[in-house]
Image (cartoon, rainbow, N blue to C red; front, side, top):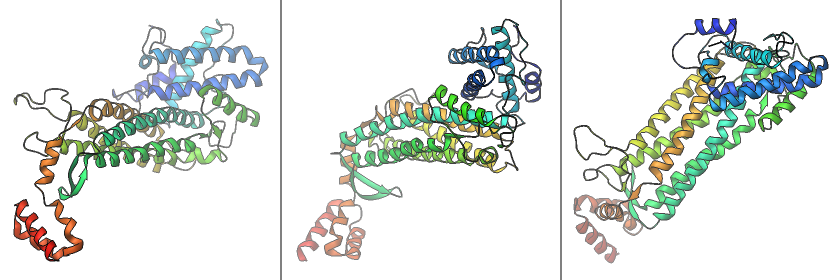
Length: 433
């Protein structure tokens, strides 16, 4: 089958043959949206090249549809955009892969009436250093919106459980030790608040991603194109993506510094932390069912053992925790990569892009599955909650105000594990007061 890319892509394919995974498709999609904005811009600025850039625009549309269907001229996307996710050169190989494929499509669209050059034509007025980070911002925003929506749905599901279980009293715990009476609804309400913060943070951080250095070319100074192009290309990209993009006040800053991706990753890590906390609480409350806390019952998703009949594991909670660990690891990689930008460029953008988009996609799927297969399907074991509360010393705290901390502590100590003995002693001392 005919190769749609050229010599530079072949070299990159050979040099970075890690046999691991290809560049994230979302990044490729966003990069082609950038190219479409360029094509529309040059139709207005270069009348003598209008036919060429009309063909380029049509080619972009063909590729975008092909990516959506994972079918580009009978080939899956990874057979057309072939560069490995991790590569040297700040993403130049991926950018050239796009340029060469786009040149091939545009050449066909023109029916060979004129020669199309992947650099002179497809890359006119551009550099990897402004196209790649712009595409990453677009791809990140598109996925952030999806994740924020899933977080909103998870928040709602937790709030529904809060209302449903508001009347179920249970034993609260601190440091895994008996503490004070609460309701099961209280716990779910706290989970919902944590997720609500995550949702809001992710929604707001989009503002920082909307600024782009597109038009800044190599180092952000705009060398190689006009001010008119710089203004118009952002306007066209805004229309194509439906995102309120704006040209950065100081494009060189965004060419040099990638801290905004560290910020976004940090918020993803915060979500991962909250998901870990909630999922692990579910595991503990589900533990047993006879030898553990047994306060909730997670839905039976699959057999839990090849040797112990009837054993069922909290697999959805465990999956959620593992994804969260992966997101935390990705955050460390993004932090290190962003810190290693030198002078006017960061050479490690491919690692930042791969880790960030992977975290966004993993979290989006995980939050959805956790909501559908864990939160919405779990059930309260009300009798077990009541039993554990009644068999605890949690009620003793109510007497501290009248009897004092030391006296209550003494009565708890001398009563041992007999709750009824403690209750009688406290009532007697209370009457004496």
